[in-house]
Image 1 (cartoon, helix red, strand yellow):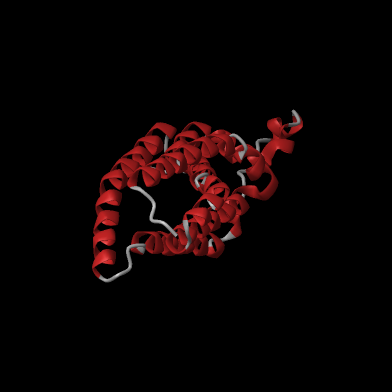
Image 2 (cartoon, rainbow, N blue to C red):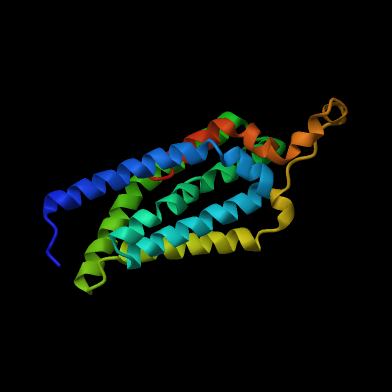
Length: 198
């Protein structure tokens, strides 16, 4: 029917952003349970597939579809948590200190914060010029699907938690091994999850 005013669009964009941040904070608190239940690989597959579904909904859907995709987006934004924790554990196993890994991770995130907006701005301009303003979202969908395929193609042993020392098993620590990676990298993982939507 009637065209929406710019003020209505601004309010909806503000509400969408607020709900995205709130939901992500709540879901991030449940990430440990997800990793414990599905494993690091299963959780990462779920999250990357959720990212792809959200980006596709934003590219092809209406405002209602975008709001309906919010819960899926919340799950998707936890995609880096298990990966970061696993990298921390694997790096420590081959001699990399957690400080070194955390620094490299932060440097990469800083680089992406510069390159990402520039790339997406270019894609938006290119998309508008060819009649496809949703091109940035379509590109993000392709990236998320590529990440999902990479997780599927990776050997399963890459995602296995490291073996625990005998003393830890004797003390009854073996029962929590499914979430050991996430606990080991909780410092880096928490930062990754909160910043995932930038």
